[in-house]
Length: 263
Image: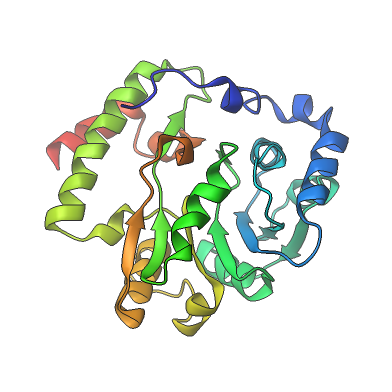
């Protein structure tokens, strides 16, 4: 069952950037502490003009419950705002990718990563404390090519969660249909998935044909090349909370729900 309200361990990070910046030293301290030694895994976060959102994401990672060593890379994709300086102040590795676009940014992060395992994240998403361990756990089984999870929408613009709850329920039905009757890989999101770095490099990372998405196509390549399975992490504690701007691009949650019902 989906959550109707935003839980406290997520809401604590859902604050304006200037408010979160008051805790930047604490965020930095925790992130540096979790990145000691040789990384077990690398979190890759592409970012373009995310100064309003990036601290929400990094603040949530600073409260991760994992005991693993985690490298966090923010790939600055030609931002003209303070994205890079905020990321650096928060204690993460910040690298530049001059070629504009999510595919180039994710590929840059993949090549720079030092962890054997890769976690895909986004700069407008809040991650729960157990997310890292829940997403990496299934990769201990060799027949799993990629792990993917689901998400909730955060009503950043002051909308009620009720409308988002309804939209998410419709999405769940579509995902079941995709998984059973169509193509499971279309359920994979770049802000909530994990795979092995070496296997990702073998299949040329996130590079994909025109008309496809980088995250779903990577899942297809990994599954088909290595003859392995995709794993849906259904634990509710692994579900992330992401910006509603994906819905705003469709004209708002009600209009987006209408489009989904028609499909």
